[in-house]
Picture 1 (cartoon, rainbow, N blue to C red):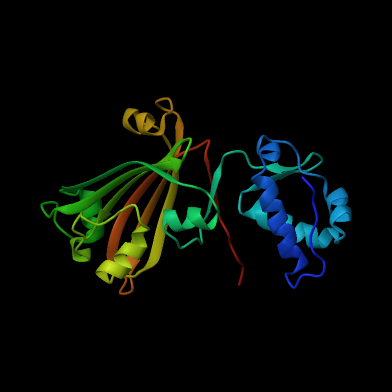
Picture 2 (picture 1 turned 180 degrees about the vertical axis):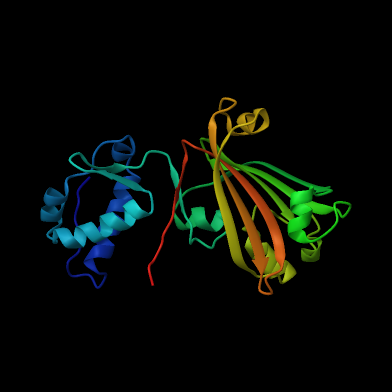
Length: 243
């Protein structure tokens, strides 16, 4: 692949370098794990400073798309999907923003009595039916996450909605519910037989469990979400800023 950027363009050089790197990430040659050209050679070839190139590289490393190893080099981060703790997006929106094609393998909607944990979060009794949404999702080549969502009856979902659309878009446009706060808990678990079958892994294999508690503008609970991710296909990054 010929590597070049347009020095006469109004687009900043670091953004052009970033886009070029994104193109390399999607190139089968590098997707197979081949190291990217080293920084010195690539910066020289593009006629930009190493500082400018590193600005682009650092962004993609932070996003989990590239992996940099000292003394070895930089390469595409395998098949892992990355998520940042400050990403306030639905799964569909988050993956779309990263250019990752997503396939829905299963989608189930039912009305159930919540267990005590879900009922306590919603502040309702266990005898109050809630909508349960289960979705098996992943890349076209295979699933990597199984979602289970419960919704407060106040949201007034009917179960007839097109849940292939971004969830929070549905809540806002069809039910006038705006999700504004998300609290999350991350833990490592051994896959149960049920989860293992869904994610096509061995029972007791490690999975990442992400619990998401979602609230509306009035800080009222609207969604209780469980996400079971294949450990070999998902990276969760955390950003902390000191004030």
